[in-house]
Image (cartoon, rainbow, N blue to C red; front, side, top):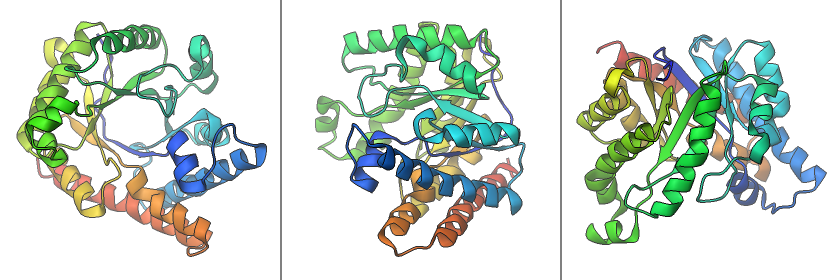
Length: 305
């Protein structure tokens, strides 16, 4: 049974690696030392935005960062010294099937940073490739079992991409898929992972468009005595209006303890800075403003439950 985590949790994720390096910087692996340093420096700007938001009132005991070891090791160490909530990514970036970033050495890398959470991103459609889903579950069970004996907890980011037949059944409309099909697939995937012995303390869930679906997610993650397990809603790179909509829906549902909004918080600022249209100071200020906005909106709605 998971220990769970049911305290407010406001995460600024910037553990993006493969797509971030290629789409924002135009870099392709293998990276040179200079390219690696460029990406790491951009993540320092995001981190400074986070720290600025703390100075402006985001509660420190509720605020956290999610960052990767490859480009964010220095940030992870600084955040640990500040006793900040830390989530460390464990998955290999840029591939559809979950595997460990550092293979058989995954536990040592987690131990070296002692994060609050070890986070894993998993793409799983219960009606998809059964063999792949089984392989993923076997690897995730190892992570779950290890974390059960570790101070770090498991943060499970679940993405449920549509299968071709599912998308075809809604006329190729991804918004209809999100509304009509994805919620039930999310419930099913969570149950299957739990039944496979994978116990997350926090589930990181793609935004849902109805409070009823959010309530059903909470019921699912907390079934059979998992009473302390929490959910946070992610932004999926959407625009401000959609992110705020998802935040408000989730914030009204007990069991949704916060959010993890990444690209919507920083991508335009980093792209603008790289193009020379935004100064470093402006980027830091704008990233802080976004994170403050998500926090204040979530807390405003949550206080009215």
